[in-house]
Length: 460
Ligand SMILES: NC(=O)c1ccc[n+]([C@@H]2O[C@H](COP(=O)([O-])OP(=O)(O)OC[C@H]3O[C@@H](n4cnc5c(N)ncnc54)[C@H](O)[C@@H]3O)[C@@H](O)[C@H]2O)c1
Image 1 (cartoon, rainbow, N blue to C red):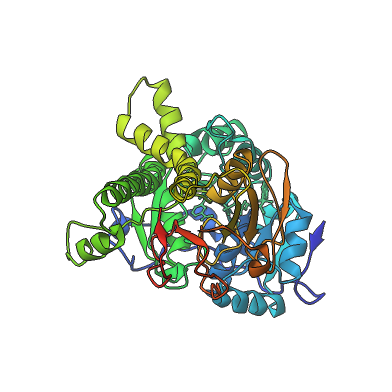
Image 2 (cartoon, protein in one colour; image 1 turned 45 degrees about the horizontal axis):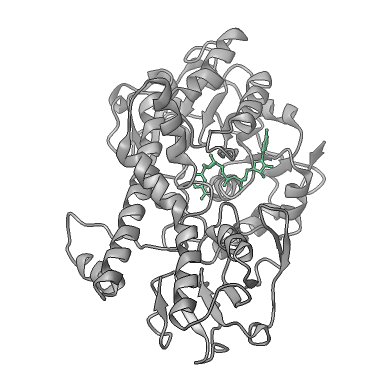
């Protein structure tokens, strides 16, 4: 079914074919020799279709639309489409404004109908790439979305994966199936990989100011994709699909390793009675050779806890060890357990036990100012505290109710003061968090390392 969010007359304009830009915003390997492929003379109704309108896909669709492209958004979930239509999607204020613009425009359409994909000059895939409970990549969603895109592709289209994935995935899920269908990349259709780099909840860097790394199945494919991406962001080209796929894995593995190091430093500093935040802030004054990473209660979201496992999984098949990455991921995974242990320690130092203690976890989102619970360490911490016999509650108005991995359902306590916590566990400090209800009688464990304003807070 196609759902128009536009006036009943529907999109009126015919999308302009993608043409290679005359000037690339970043140095590009083939910019001097770029040609417009003949198939791009074909007119499509939409400039771009975005497959998967989640945390990445919806802001991407809005960025393209804001930059002047006509946009078709496709999501298989009617519930997600309803959330978007009712303006309940978790978005930055700037993206909310763009969504309002899109709703009244005649060139923005959201639908659950895969057949609509053939109406777009470019199809960009932004579906989730999680790991399963054994930390093995779960490619089911990406496989299904890719198969759907291939089945509905038409000559002249650009197909671009942006989901984080293993090296070789674009070749396996797009190039080979297209060849099988008789559509040769670089001749009949165009295939590229450009990893998404969005940082949900971060209003300080505009989506369109973040350069896009791009690799094509052929030089012509890269030219076509470059022309599309350059409409709204600077482009940095790499010589292959594989190099583009590996770039994203390096970016997120880099973050994982550095977060693990920051966690280790926090433990080292605590042993030596130093506030690690003071040390990190000081080191960050060096204008080169240092990049600040903060320790914390663990990592969440759809990137750091998952992406390096795509690399580790693939390396197993090649019998290639990666001990540093393996160790970093193990350290990160153990962090929520460390929070539970620390809570036990703090109570024990005061002559009390964790069993029966009242512990309030404040902020459960995986990071500040987002309404995203995926892989949030808070879930594991709440479960660990429950298993140790604590009376737990959480306070985060973004989540009126949550379900732990063991199936237990908890409700937001709403009134933090009346919960009468023995221990306040500061997990995520949203910018609108009011902590004025905390009393001197309560232990405050700060897992954010950023609560210097909280009197007598105990650092994780
Ligand atoms: N969330 C982030 O911070 C972030 C940042 C950079 C990169 N990424 C990567 O971007 C990708 C997407 O992540 P996300 O956080 O946006 O996921 P998400 O879960 O928020 O959204 C994915 C959307 O895709 C839809 N979907 C699933 N299968 C589909 C199909 N076959 N056709 C159409 N729609 C389909 C789902 O209904 C959902 O609405 C992942 O690979 C992730 O690693 C995420």
